[in-house]
Image (cartoon, rainbow, N blue to C red; front, side):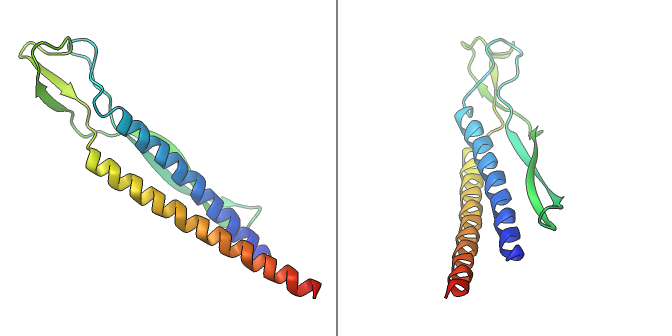
Length: 137
């Protein structure tokens, strides 16, 4: 029975981590067109989530945590837009380093990982219910 509880806790930690990842991806997508307000200013910088596994002494196993959010160091894009207040002396505006195709793939991957963890939780719940039913019979 303890193993089923542990698998549920591990799956729950995975779901929480993937939910946080989805929030970061959504933020990236929402800011994909955000440029600086002033000349020489930096546009929105893509964010990445860093996961780590930690020992959960209560269940005697390792769980995943969304450890921190970092800024993507990929270079910004450039677009010729001389009328923009964010344009440099040559008329170029820095654009966010967000690639919508990559964000969509990250979102889909996080969604699938979330669903996989949910399936494990449901399986653990079903197994627990079967064990309880057999004990009550």
